[in-house]
Each structure stands twice: as C-alpha cells, then as structure tokens.
Length: 156
Ligand code: FES
Ligand code: FES
Image 1 (cartoon, rainbow, N blue to C red):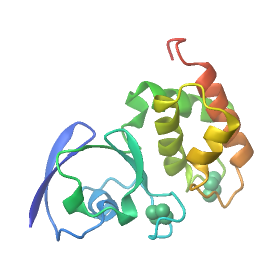
Image 2: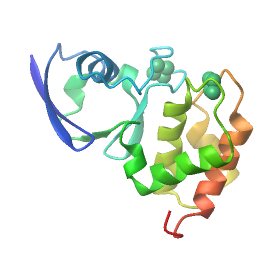
Image 3: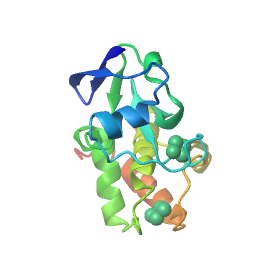
Image 4: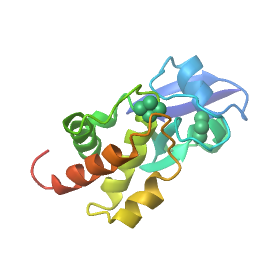
C-alpha cells in the first residue's frame, strides 16, 4: 500500500507492505544506499538513521510506524550543525578504515551531540555501544566525538 514519508526534507510516496523495514525502503525503493545493512536484527548499528532527531535502527523499523515523522539519513546529515561537526572531526582524526560502519556511527554520534553538546565518556559509551566496528576504530570514534563536542559554538 502507498505510504508518504519525509526523508531529508523531501516527501516521497512509496508503495510497499506496511511491515517493510525502513532500511529496505531507503535502499531499495529510494536508492539511498548510504545507510548500510549489517545484521538486520538491531545488533550492529550500520542501519542507523534519525527519526525526528532520534537515532533508530532502520532495519527493525517498519514503514507503517513512521507516520509524519522526519527521517534524516547519512546523505543529509552533513547539512546539520552536529552532523557537520562529527564528519569534520572524523576526517581530522582519520577515523575511517573500511568505512562500512561509519554512516551508522556518524548518525549515532551526531544525534548524541545534538542532544548533549558536552557528552561524558559514559554518555558516549551509552550512545555508541550499539554501533559495531569490525575494524576496531572505537578509540578514534570517541576522540572524534570529543573533538566535535569541543567545537560546539565555534561556528562549525
Ligand atoms: S543492520 Fe540494523 S542494527 Fe544491524
Ligand atoms: S571502519 Fe570498518 S567496520 Fe568500522
């Protein structure tokens, strides 16, 4: 059945079953492949997007639960202040190795500093513990989040 969803500021009509995961709609229907499939069962974080600013796992989020909420994906997160700071900090700290997990990492990290501009180590652990990185970039991800948080209010 048709659903109308708002993704990155644009409205899309998609004709899928109501239990179709948002991840499949983004990737297979809308062709937005920046959001990754990892586990499909909410254990890895590769599929993380924002729904009304909150980081969620799109692999277990059925399209019929989205309603009028605003979805933001990795394709547009750089247009937000927090997303831009996280992406810049990631480059500055040379976080990325293979990159597969990174869109999900960036989405979780940007949701964190958007809601908590001065996260503690514990806050970072809580926000990022569900994002798995096979390349083991965790130390640099944490450094990048701290760098991004420090740049809050400096025009970045
Ligand atoms: S693909 Fe969604 S959490 Fe792993
Ligand atoms: S950078 Fe390779 S899985 Fe995270």
